[in-house]
Length: 498
Image (cartoon, rainbow, N blue to C red; front, side, top):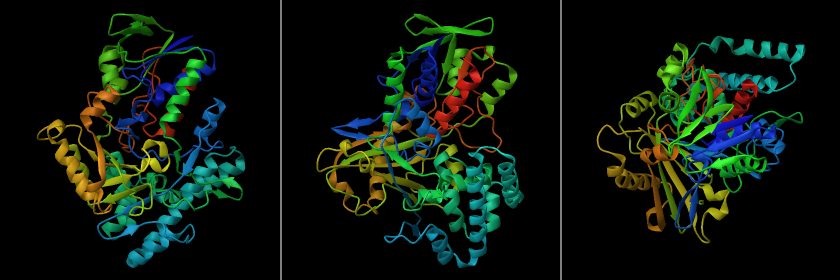
């Protein structure tokens, strides 16, 4: 069969690799010069930057993504690392001397003694969900199912709670609630709209100290957080090379204008230059609304699919500042990545974001050192620093082009509180705005990271109402995140039955 894939981002590449593995002819189409979408590197004056901190799970060979890549002959070297968290009033940073896997719990009880009982309850909740995650990955025997049932019974009382309801029930102090809810800002999500069962998986303790063991009783139990040595773009490069080595074709700088549909069936693609490519199956990626409205045509969808497209909520954008510096900033920030929160009111912050108000870093930002796991990203004697914040796709007043320099200077001033002397050591600066990401991802609305994890929200399904037309990527039913997009594309391929 001939499979034409519109968009050579991670979802399209993963689907294409599955198809190529099984002997299908794969044609990848992408408007950019190179594959990878947001996994491609930003470049400036001899420096290279990842599009944000791509600290990933599931990369070990015995885990789902690592095992899949290994099966294709794609072998990655990974580096385990951790991240820090700081607020205006306190910081949770790994201690210099390892204090065991429960050091964060102990530290929080010292900071918030009035909420000690709630902290203990949170960690019982955490342990139960980690156990359910582990058991869910084991062979499903009667014993395993019984263990899962008994474990779930311990936390069943929370299953209908949002993150806001859950943390307000356990913690009286809003500062403590931020410790666990704060990461939701990365998804442009309000704690009022996300199920509380999400919290342990976005706050896994092994993410905050790389010394915490990920094994229990000789088996991989907790997720480990890793960077790809040399940059995560190596995943995209490996997948594309695999497809090409199995007879596939990559058409860069090419725009697919229309999916050709006959009698309710996708039969090919028409390119913007008028050429047509016949296909037995077509796969779309990227912006769901753009793809189905313009490239497919809403008239080919049923009412249910159109309703999902209308209702689902894509994430907002990011304002990303890449700096090449001629000094080593790591003595001031020990971790490759640290989140610096500026506001405890996430609900108000998200509301402002969605209304087009950019906080200019005052609500929070992160600082990331990409050359810690990719030394070749910086010339000798230099280092890379990335600072970014979530932001509206479009500003309520003015444009990103008009304001980006002033916004970049503001982020540098904020970051200098943690990286002294930063402004005096900048040798190059690359600013990436929502407008730039619209171009990179071929989207009318930049949506960095996929979809907001709104509880019970339906996202565009992989299987569409058009026969032999499939949809994958971070705005599909699986949602965003590198391991999730790869897993979702594999599942989409399985369901497609090609």
